Image 1 (cartoon, rainbow, N blue to C red):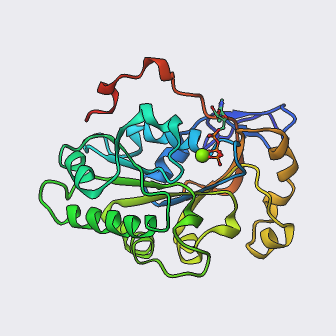
Image 2 (image 1 turned 30 degrees about the horizontal axis):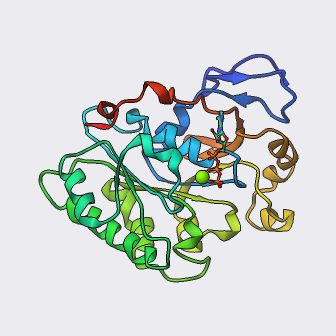
Image 3 (image 1 turned 45 degrees about the vertical axis):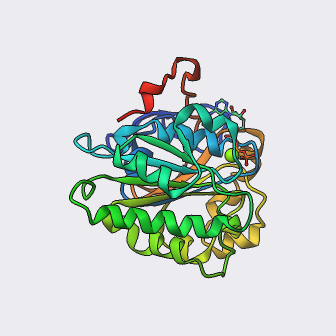
Length: 261
Ligand SMILES: Nc1ncnc2c1ncn2[C@@H]1O[C@H](COP(=O)(O)OP(=O)(O)OP(=O)(O)O)[C@@H](O)[C@H]1O
Ligand SMILES: [Mg+2]
C-alpha cells in the first residue's frame, strides 16, 4: 500500500495502522453525502450508532450555510444520552411549535408501543406539509429514526416511511435510519438509501454476498475488535472505506443556545 495520498478524495487518510484498509479520519465526504441522500447506519448495540448520529445532529454544515436546517431525532428507545442535544417533545403539537421556530434540534419521543408507527407517518406528513409553506420551503429537514425495525418489518408496508424514502430526498426531507443489522431494514427504504455506514454487525456472510457487500465480510472481524470504527460507502466515494471513531462533542460545554437556530 502506497504512502502517497491522492489528490482527489485523499483527505484525512491514515496509513500504517493494523486496519485492513487505510483509515479515513475526515468526516467531510460523509457530511456532504448525508445532505444529498438518505442514509443507513447499522451496527450492534454499543458500537456507536447513536453517538455518530449526535455528531451529525450537531453538524449544521451538512446543509447549505444560507439555510436553517431542522434536525429531528425520533428517539425510539428514549435514550437519555440524547437529552442535552435538543428540545424534547412527544406529540405533533409541540413538534410544530419548534419547527415553526426553526429550532435546530428536536428530540421526538414516541410512545413505547406499536402506536409509534403512526407517529412516524404523522411526522413525515407534517414535514411534507411544511415544505409547501413559503416559510419553510427552503428549510432542509433531517429526520433520524432509531431502531427502524420497530416501525416497519423488512417486507411490511409503512405509509410514512415509504413516502419519505421515495419522495423525501427531492424535497429536502432526508432520512437517517438506524438499526442493528442490514437484514432488519425495511426493504423499500434500503433500496432508496444512497449512503451506508456500518459498525460491526452480526450478519451472515451469505447475506452480505447476496447484497454485493463482499468487501464488508473481510472487515467484520476487525470492526468487531475496533469499536466505534466503521465502514462506509456514500454518493461521495465509490468504494467501501474504513473510518476511525468520530471525535466526541464536548457535552459539558453545551448550553441551550447551542440548539437554538
Ligand atoms: N466515537 C466514539 N468515541 C468515544 N466513545 C464513543 C464513540 N462512539 C460511541 N462511544 C461510546 O460508546 C457507548 C455506546 O455508544 P452508542 O450509544 O452510540 O451505541 P449504539 O450503537 O447507539 O448502541 P445501542 O444500539 O445500544 O443504542 C457510549 O457510551 C458512547 O459514549
Ligand atoms: Mg443507540
